[in-house]
Length: 241
Picture (cartoon, rainbow, N blue to C red):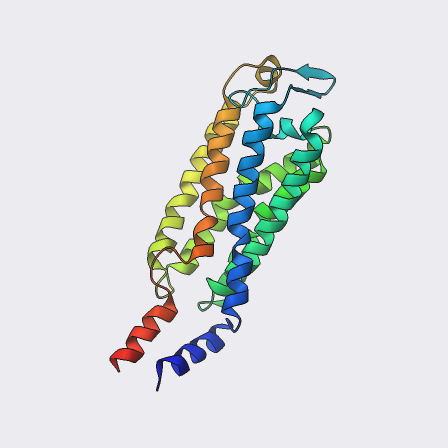
């Protein structure tokens, strides 16, 4: 049996019949985090401040102020548009990830991994439409972004570590889950509404560290970067035969 025939059978068996298009979709997992990071860096540098709950908060500091503050005031239209675009790109990326990196294994685990990974992108879209002036929905969206990866990384890691070529990345996601939990707890403990209003504390810094850490785990899927893909293993096996 030739290597090409073997690869075709692997693709069909895993449901990954459009690997090239799926890989392009997976690039959304890179574009989304890059767009979001650039937005809060640039807008945070030019924001004069914002008003929330009839309180004017100025100057805007990335050390003390949450990124959500950029969704109000003069930077609102740019930040909120970016949040919706980030969520949309990440969601497209998750679809690509599901079609390329999550074949094989138990179907229920694969479905759970895809669904849980999609929660963070949905959270970005939610906070893009509901700013700090709508605290209930905004808080829900923030939880989807910052807390759901604790579970999604765990379930996806357990799934990937059983797949040929993805054992190492699966193990790393199992480490990413508790790491994200620790950073989320640190951020939660550092956040105080009164301190933010007074321009004190460091909640902005801990939040940004948390965002950078959890979004960084979405990026590797788009570039086939970690471990050896199952297709590569099958190619080498066929060559040996």
